[in-house]
Length: 448
Image 1: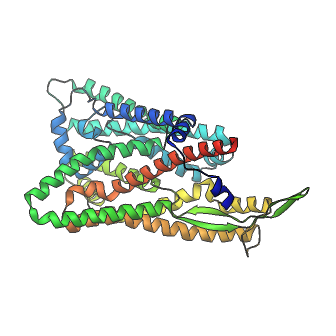
Image 2: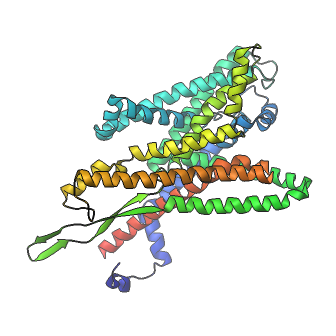
């Protein structure tokens, strides 16, 4: 910013801020987002008919995988509500479709070459697959319920099974619809915000459990202080990871039009250290929880003794969220998905960036245009993405190991994954609000 601009600027007054708030449409977007989240929270408290909620809630609190799923569903699973499946089927479907778009040429063409119409068609495929996944998970879930005492006496099991599967599937589709509406008409990513609100709603329960645990054993007080300090430091590193960028200097050519010379000002391309934000975390959790859920529910069934039962028990240990193997797979998944997410982002394609720079006569200092520029950008992106992926993976593991060392296990679920998601989603929301306000500020400046 030049000195002339600085002298001409004034601090915005309350009236200016209110004008920006109203004119940019930000108020409507925030109110719409809040309304949809309230609707989601309301649906969480609508239980399925014929369920002994107290019994299943106690069962979920004793099972690590069910408890972890309950956290991400905002308590909907523990209450066995119409939204018990939550946003999980939609996220899993989105991941699978994105992976398939890389493998199948026809889907890749829809995503990259067919423009908005192709992306809409791909979104439609994602929705259809979400319905299939939701129905499959509902069948498995109700099969698990049939082997427990969670169904109240006197209920016709066949009608209960059919109606519950249809209700759970419809509930998951409704959550998907609300998520897409928030993304389209509100502020932030709808799926991330729904997970964020769900995690946030579980904080009071985790806090009360921790307070009770420390009250029963005063020796854990110092461990709790250390754990909270580690959580705070983790939050600081998450913010740094989310906001850190690698600037690549770009030299722009000068152009003379009449008596005036345009261009010639050096700019830069900002490459984020963590280009995927919280999405690699959410994707990794969704991918790992899918087999974990199936194995947990199947493991509760009365399987005959033999190799099938032994295999299910072994896989249950591998995918148990409190096990070392789970965290090793979790770390690898985060690193792999960070690279995958970076590879499909339009603003992180070295060849396309190099072609655009060559087209407009711009270049990176000391590097020839064309292929050398693409190779240089590829090396830069590989290094920054590697640093970001490793950093994100390590940050995801630190709180979990801190909970194990300090023996404060009541915060383990919220510490390992949820903390990153909450901070990441909050930062994304703040950045989007800031973008709307800045856009309005620029409009006002141009008019003046």
